[in-house]
Image (cartoon, rainbow, N blue to C red; front, side):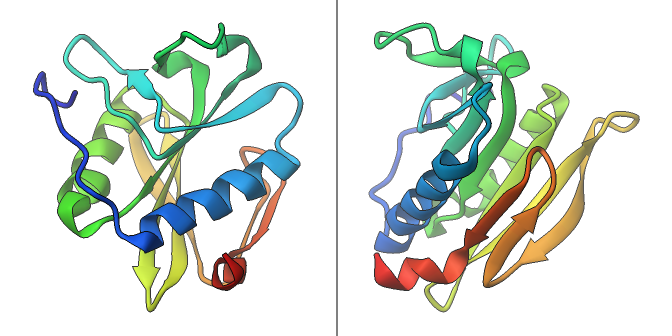
Length: 159
């Protein structure tokens, strides 16, 4: 749900699925024990906003069982959106604005560049409550926040 309206997922292109798989597997290999990696779960930002990011990293305590359908924004450390042709504006503009306003500290936007993922890494500026671009990663995603991350993005070729 975005802006109080239901948003239905469109069929995804192969790149979308492969990019999500690559990042989920990479994050799960290195995520600290105090965190969990989840895909396509609702995140309640406020009464009218419950988007489903492609990937989110949550506090381990936010995982309350197999029947759970959402997390609260305060439990989310990172959201990731893989941009698709049919969701371009939502993934590039609307969702990051909503995530930032809700106080989610980190956001990644993944774009398709000739079949390879390019990851745009953003960090929340607490003074403006907006995201600031901190890096653009082409072949390797290597960052030190929110934890040490090193993912070979070219591995998508083997999936």
